[in-house]
Length: 252
Image (cartoon, rainbow, N blue to C red; front, side):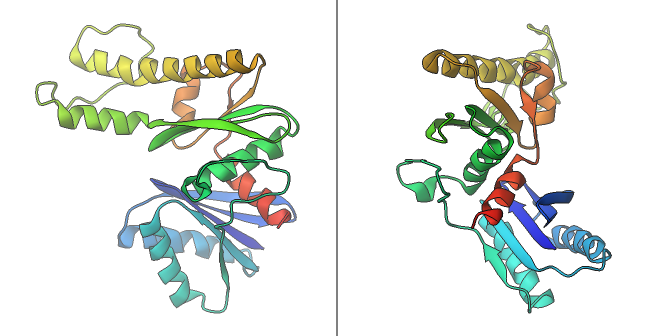
């Protein structure tokens, strides 16, 4: 069996990949300490209980600190297995045409491949809601049309609290209100309604620009939360990045 590891900014996903199927998906928050290694090793032990050895270990990352931690772990525990770090951002028929491709996040690259694997020959918008909120847009010819990078909802919220001394440190609530009548309510509306309306508006603008409907995929750590406030046609797929890595492995 193959092990896939996808290291994001705030969390790391692990999954098994065998016979073109992804299974046993697990996620760990990115703590750079013993807790992370403890949880990481615990998941690997559960995988190894299946009495199959890792044929290959494929890693994609955007968080260098966690990557170094995992690399050091494997060098100590699994010396005989070659780790394949996927750095190449080229894929057959994918016309990406991105200025300075080295600055194009591998998570965004594999999100595009994941969307293509699900909705082949169809135009797609991939929205990854996490530390950052990113949009990546593909047409039906597998051409990259462009993208958007915004601060993620929690990133924006934390910045607001830390930069405004008078607002106070309030715990926001998930809210479907349009207006609030307390500071906590107003912050909650800004977090949920503000971010969801921004996402929906950007999708509308993209569709108007290209005069067509797109498949819209939501992925990332906060995608399940915001899907409740967004149109039902938006597809939540938290394993989209893993699907992109799997497609890459199958066609390498």
